[in-house]
Image (cartoon, rainbow, N blue to C red; front, top):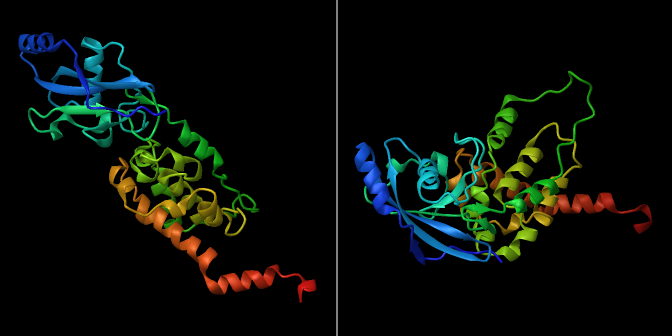
Amino acid sequence: MTARPTNEATTGGASDAATGAASARGAGTITHLRVWRGDDDGGRLQDFDVEVNEGEVVLDIVHRLQATQAPDLAVRWNCKAGKCGSCSAEVNGRPRLMCMTRMSIFEPGETITITPLRAFPVIKDLVTDVSYNYAKARAVPSFVPPNLAPGEYRMQQVDVDRSQEFRKCIECFLCQNTCHVVRDHDENKPAFAGPRFFARIAELDMHPLDAYPEDGRKREAQDAFGLGMCNITKCCTDVCPESIKITDNAIIPMKERVADVKYDPVRWIASTIRRRRPSDG
């Protein structure tokens, strides 16, 4: 069972202490936070008042909350530089990296609500089980090197640039979380890889040196990874912290390639003729 954040709330009980400490130092303002606390069996939003200083990001405030009022609050993070993808959460309902979300984007006095990624099971508080994504990653066939001698590899710069865009992915899984195909439909997960892995498949299929069997990745994208379930709403592109154009540069081109292979009548006739055995005639 995946626990979903509810609107029930409890009070952290340290508001006066936070206000007094901030006033004594003459620094910062007090912001009201609502943070989801619980595990896979259930939980609720809990209210806190936390000091905020100029230039801080949401992750700074969560760390201050841990240090002053909620030492047992579970949160996943690592680099605090927007490159590890660990601190993904939903801030006021939008999937974001907490380390890259500045407090200054919110209105003065606005309540900040922080909840775990909705598409994945909750382990504790803001930490979710994203192992679904690693299982999908293992299922994608890897790059197959061509049968060329060292020094014979040749690639056009346009192919390098196209691949580099997809390689900017930091695997924060915000795109996976916001995709409506799995966000509220766990039953779709076995058949659907999600936008992060459609981008990976597209990168490999577009690679001029990939020696994977001809048209194999296109057919697998549709048959094994559920590319056809995506209806290109671009919500994945909207939340990508690396500004990768997942929909325009990966998913739509792959859909076009799949259509060419599986549904083009001329190609179908040609492939049928090639598959016919001499005895069939």
